[in-house]
Image (tube, rainbow, N blue to C red; front, side):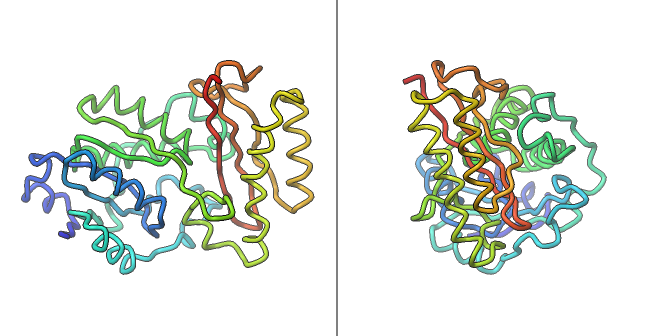
Length: 272
């Protein structure tokens, strides 16, 4: 596997002339990331993983400094599954970039209490796409709002890039895999699977209760387990507005805090 650290490295090797499948990450790779790389290999392109902890998407009181940095073990994992390239730019990669303003949908869900977060996401994605110019880019659907924002942004500004969204990979107890799981204490880690359980309970009982009742019952149970809810609800999959029913399919989504760690999860329902 070749490792590149600068934009010139990418240009000098004319990587984009070979057809690339890109997996953008912030490192601390887990099975969720690796599943994206394995899926990308089915597209008959060379695979390239970017690893960059993007300071632009962290708010002033968020965990940028504490975000896990595991470059050496990340490289070992990439080599083990035969990734072709890694792009690991230096810290100044995000400096002096013109900030891209995300559309209004970015102010819903995660964007409500994280102002500017998705501006930072789109700004760095714009930079990474401009440097690498892949044919495909792969994202996990755990960050569903991020996925649809990047998909729409790409349609408008990088029509040659196809965005692929892939299912959430979970631990054996159902917790959605996330680099932030490593920041949970032992006791918090035992409680964390309640987040996914609450989503499953809503899904399985959606014909027995109203949406208001489903959210209220689930919220109360989570709060009894010391899980602080940022949002929990049923939303339209395209607009992210609160859904009035489940008939057209919907997104059951949550963001919650366990101690100091913010976790997100969702279940995407089809029309049936």
